[in-house]
Each structure stands twice: as C-alpha cells, then as structure tokens.
Length: 325
Image (cartoon, rainbow, N blue to C red; front, side, top):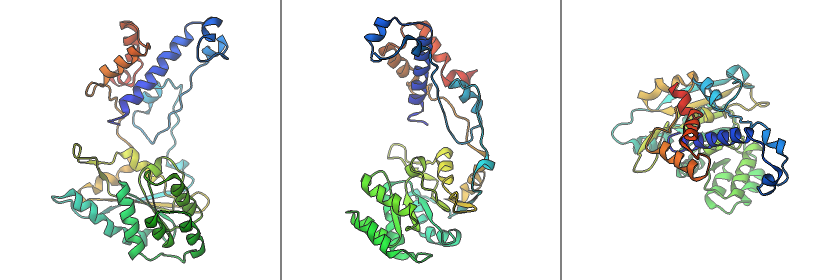
C-alpha cells in the first residue's frame, strides 16, 4: 500500500532485528529486573517470535514468506470456499469527461442489479465513501420495493434503538447503511438487524469487508474507483480490497452459492473479468520518496540500529532486499 506499506515493512523489520538481538545474548537477572518485563525469565528471551500473515492470492507469496521468516506458505484456492462464488462484471457505460457524474450515475443501476441477482436474499452494496452509503440507502428506501415480506415488528424495534433519523427511516424499509462515521451503538444495531435477516439490503464502505463478519448472498461493488482528495483525484480500488469485498458473497449454512457483481465502466470490464487471476506482485515501498531514509532514522533514534553494520543487516532483512535479489 502506497501510504502505509513502508511503515508496516519497517515495523516487521524492527521486530525481526530485536528478535535476533535478544536471541544472540543472555540477559542477566538484574537487567531483566530493571526492564519492563520484570516477571520474565532469562530463557524466555530465547523464544522465537511468530508472525502470521494472511492475504488473498499473491504471485510472490514465497518472497513474503521468506520476509516474515516463515518455514512454509499455505495456499488456499477457491476449492476451499465453503460456498461456491460466481462473479459478474456489469458495464455501466463510458466515463466521459466527468468522472464524478459517472460515479453518481451508478446509483440508478443498483435497483435493477438487486432485482436481477439477489433472488430475494440479503445483499450488501459496497460504496466508496460514507456519504455514498447514506445517499444510496435513502434512494433505495424511497424507490425500491423489498423482494420479500419484511418483518415490520423487528424493523420497528431496531429503528427505535437509534437516534439517527436517516438511519431510522431506512431501517423501517428493510435497508441500512454502515460506515466508520456511525456511532458504535448504531453500527451494532445495523449489524444485528442484518444478521437476524431483518434487512434485505445493506449499503456499506469497504471497512465492513475488512472487519465485521457479515456475509450476504449477493455483494455489489458500486464502482471501481474512489475520490482520494484534490491532490490525488480519482484512483482505482486496489485488487486486494476488491477481493475482500467479493469474498463476502455467500453465507455458509444458508446458501449453496454466492454472487458478486462488480459495477465499472465499459473500458474496464475486461480487466475486472480477470479478477480471479489474483493480485499484482507485492512490492516494497521503501525506495519511494524518502521512506528508506526516514525508516532508518527512526530505527537509529530508537536504538535499534547503532552502527553501519546493523543498518546493513536491517536492510538485508527487509522486503526490499528480498525483491532486489
């Protein structure tokens, strides 16, 4: 990841450096007594650190396994999914001169996609901003008819538990939105309502795909780009995030299959039809900007690196070194 990748790589390299240093010497009892780990025994420092890294399919999995010093890497393909998954890519026209207007036009395609693919079962529509989740939820609550009869008493109960008017209105129609801007109590209400089967559609940001386990029969990804501010403009959603969202389709124990629909522009359709081929090679970000200099300075200031030899050793245990080899 462009913004946080170098930080994560630096943290792992630091942990590995400290582990090697701890394993190479035996601290005296008085040194342990004056440390933050007063209850530790000298032999405890010889315990090997364990790193568990989990990701979607990666082309250079072996290099990552070597970086985290794993003896082996386990690969789980689609045959391990408890529920088979079907992926469809919906071309929603050409972008034209205004990307914002194209992204906004995607809302009008959502009702027809829900009607075509949901089969009357729960659906999650992933949007790329908090405002989008609320806007789409409001539009669906005003114009889209639930495919099955709703449990009105349950919906009134959930709606009565929140003090957010826009969320109350959506809940009463069997629809809700979920994003990090909601109060924790409201997020719990939405999650409980969806898990109980009271909601037929949930509009959420991608944070839901990374955290809370709320699978649905149908997953719709509304657009394949997101606005990242004036400095960065519109950027494509990385394949890793897309795969995380797609993976929410299919409910073990409830469905015999799952369906994911990716909404994109006509020119990008072929690219996303090949999503099952996996992700791009994971690269180190240490050489970008001043990342390497900044990381080394941080290690020196923290006492992790105390000489040129240790600096070279630190670099040799980074992902950057594994990619250069």
